[in-house]
Amino acid sequence: MVLENKLGLTNSADLAREEERISKTKAITLFETGYLDKLDAGKFDCLSKIHRYLFDEIYPFAGEIRTENIAKGNFRFAPVMYLKTSLEHIDAMPQSNFDEIVEKYVEMNAAHPFREGNGRSTRIWLDLILKKELGQVIDWSRIDKEDYLLAMERSPIKDTEIKVLLKSALTTEINNREVYMKGIDASYHYEGYNTFRSDDLK
Image 1 (cartoon, helix red, strand yellow):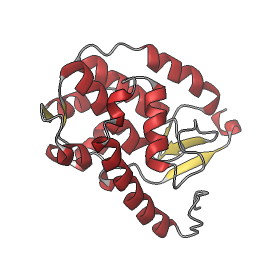
Image 2: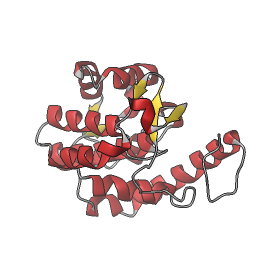
Image 3: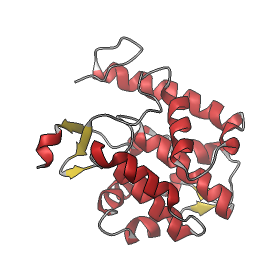
């Protein structure tokens, strides 16, 4: 199934290539214009604006909360009926130290508020919180991609692994574009989302 898109593409491989190209170009602009620094780091509104900026040329739902339930393998992200409440809870979570920030990141990943493009948007969102609160960001080039994906899959049950992984990659190079762009790399993305009906939750 190919997601509805503004590019008129009907082949999933073509869409993936164009999505990667366009979102990376937009991510560079997002970084270089200073737009990120004007956002309220840690709030869903901030994440929504990041997502809209990256994907507005590609998807009609850019920046909008998803209206479908989605799953990755056996893990089901927050059901649509509870998604708004979940996002309000995340907005209210503290973010004054590293552990609190990662816990907030884990919760936002479990919410997965958008139909597509959650990973890239949320990693930028995470770095923005770290930059504002701690004067640090993640150097994604120091994180093994497979280790990261496995740790993120396990994080809703136990977040120790992802905390250790991310903490080991902290850097004070908050204005380094290469460090920032590594988090946009496609190979960090979750792939193979499934949609399911609300009745499937019963």
